[in-house]
Image 1 (cartoon, rainbow, N blue to C red):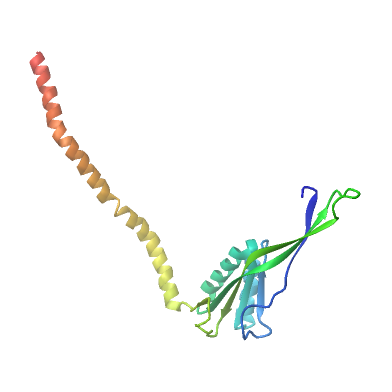
Image 2 (cartoon, one colour; image 1 turned 135 degrees about the vertical axis):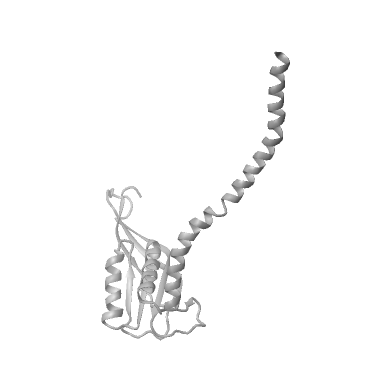
Amino acid sequence: MENFRKVRTSEEESPLPFPDLPPDVVEMKVKEGSKIRNLMNFAMAQMELKGSRQIVFSGCGRAVTKTITCVEIMKRKLGGLHQVTKVRYKTLLEVWENQDPLPGGPAQNLTVHKNVPSICILLSRDPLDPNQTGYQPPEPRQGLETQLDDTEDTSGSSTKGLKRPLPPPREELLTKKFQVQVPNNPRGSGTTDHQPDHQH
């Protein structure tokens, strides 16, 4: 494969795995090289300015984590969104071109079929069927705010919380050290005090 260079990647077109989607639903296809800011600007414009009720984010392979990030940002910004997540496999077709073809050597091009994990996430302002697999109910607005407050508090209190439990073990360690030292000290100091006396 040293002489081969990847010239094209295409993914098989597959229908979105959600029933009853409106035909004009916006699908955000997240690629590995996509910029999150650009994706979010477009998606937010669709939901806020154009009044879309539903939007789908999809990505495969290395773009899966970026897809999830976009969804989480969207949920935090808009709030009250119902979510359904579907995970599946997609087939990618990679075309590799021979850079150094030898006469009578291997073919000019190779086509490689790759199965990669793929994720599709539907976000909806309208209620969705809670019984379908992958459904997540929206977090209430207050819940979001209190959660944000909690996270701030917990981040503050977690450091405080970490500081609070630490002293007791230290105290225990110190008391153990003292317990070890206290019996030894009088004996130690006693013996050192008496020895010079005897020697003098």
